[in-house]
Length: 357
Image 1 (cartoon, rainbow, N blue to C red):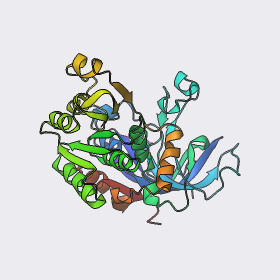
Image 2 (image 1 turned 135 degrees about the horizontal axis):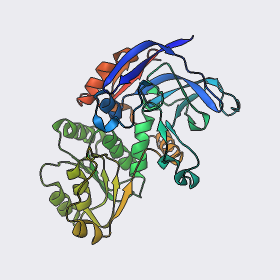
Image 3 (image 1 turned 90 degrees about the horizontal axis):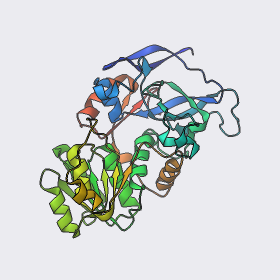
Image 4 (image 1 turned 45 degrees about the horizontal axis):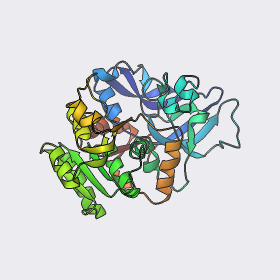
């Protein structure tokens, strides 16, 4: 087999399914993986829509896709066959790091100053095969459903966000109930948050949050609030001073400011959401932030590989996220999947390059 199918970005905002892409060959210390399943991310939607905020990151022509699972297909030179046997069920961290920058030298590999990302500026996993560094490969439990294996990347973002500070027995606000916000709710519930407030402005997201609360029997543990209706005042009043931890997922300036304002003195604000603008103003900075002695955290990706270990442990202990996958399609329907996901009609979309296993 010398050619394969894959979704290639040919220019900003322009993509197509190709059947003549060259099957990649692993170089030294690399591994070729046969992709079993892959997930569509919000970043993919922005890339395919030609969002100007992504144009400085993408490097077309490039094969898209950074959420996936698969099996080891071929080893490059210098790989220990005992560590990675052919046919092993795996996923992979798609940030390819330099290993020599200050962040890498201190073990903060996820914050590598010159990291490149497969599926964005290196060829990714919306294809039958993908090549990654062997050191990035993460073996998966054999009984982990492939639709879950396909979305470990965004689940890892949520695990990193929730577990940036201790939320057990604490009140938590989640600002933004997209896929990662939804994952954050599941993770925070599973690790024992005392009460969770979910905020969004979209009716569709609010309906999904309420449905999740009802299905999981969490009425006494979770409160869903419309962020258009004085959310700060409501939460400060209900908690008698503010939540212990705010998780800002939306990236909207109002959400960022609300997260700060609704967190109690000496509390924690964890920021994952990316604003569209380069600059975000902080309202009442002295009163809401400095004089409250807040701790602000910035989250990018997943800690390599602490987050992966935490995530797989949560899944092993019984955390179930299968219900977040609301559509499964062949890779040929990528365009449909991106459209439905971008419109919020699906919570997570999983694609199968070689058919549903």
